[in-house]
Every structure is written in C-alpha cells, then in structure tokens.
Length: 255
Image 1: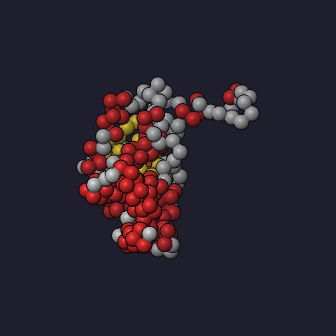
Image 2: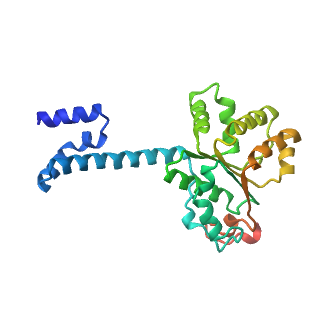
Image 3: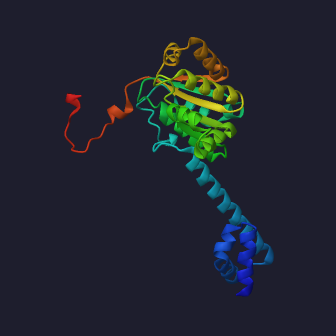
C-alpha cells in the first residue's frame, strides 16, 4: 500500500491525472490481465494521453462558447438552397483556415448564418484549432473592458492567439466611433494571422451607415475581403418556419 501511495504522489507531481486517480484499478487490472511490464507501461501512457486529449478538447469547446445548435451534420439542405452539400463539404475541410482566409455569411435573419458559423467553429475545435464564436456586441464589450477587468483581458488575449474567430451579427446595431476604431484595430491585428467568419444582414453600404464613417468602413472591409469567400444565404427565416409555442394553439394568423 505504501508503494501505491508513492505512485500516486509521483503521478501527482508529474501531472498524470489518470494514474493518480485510478492507480489501484490500473494495477489490479494489470494483475488480472497478467500484463508484461511493457504492456502495462504502454497502457498507462496511452490512457493518460487519451484522457489529456479529452480534457483539452472539452476545455477548448467550453472556451469556444458555441450556441446550442452547431452540428453541421444536421444542416437542413431542404430548407435552404443557397449552399449545396458539395460546397458545405468543401468549407468544412477547413483548407481555407490554413491560409488565413475569411468567410462572410450574408443574408436575412434566420437563413442559417449563425448556424453555419458556429458549425465551422465546432469543426475547427475538433481538429485541434483554437476557435471561438462570439458576437459583435461581445467583442465591443471585451475591447472596452480589457484594460479594466482580468476576464476581458483574458478574452482579448485569446482573440490574439486564435486560429479562427466567428463574429456573429456584425453591424446589426450602430457602433460608436471610438468602438469602431477599437474594432478596426483588432481586425487589423488579426489580418492574415487568423481566419475570421463574419455573419451579417447588412450590405457594405449599410456598414458605413452603422459606423457613421465611410473611410473606416472601407478600410475594415478591405481587410476582411482581401482573402475571403462571400456566401449569400437567401430565403425565409428557418426559426419562423419551424416556430414552436407553449400552448399549442395556432397564432400564425395573428403574426
């Protein structure tokens, strides 16, 4: 028992979490299987690696802050004809990410922009990339608060080290001049260093109106669109077409 205690202490020192927590079970199983020293050592190290990979993936998924629906395997092609299965397969391969290309998803509300953006972030995390899903509003808040709070600074530093950032609902609401400048500086810093996915229901002309600065809007678009795939989504709102209510009565005629 003393040796098992020491094994746990050594495992804790070496940060071998699985061995520290399951030493008795692993040793007992090795005795049952009559494992050789080589097999036993290999099994422990393999289990540690798998556990560490699982924990790392769970941590990165949590940090990605994905919305509830983000599985592109469930994408409804029957609802939207704006993107084909072949095109979806191509962008899901993430070759564009290796080249720091951007993607702009344009279209009315409810046409799947956020779903696709979140799904691509999910795919990227699964492949080991540092990828995050956020909103324009949250990015502005981080930029405003990064000098004042540790949590905002932590978020900002993650942006700087990211492989992929999806920014949802860009220019949905008017942006103050100093906020727009801070946002431009972030995009300028990420330019050709990190891939960016933008979702928007605004045209480039409307970006200038939202920023109240045509020069700044042009400079921002110049960096985003330099290496970029623009995907235009059309159709009715998926949420409205598949709306659910609590009482079960039909109120569509009143909407």
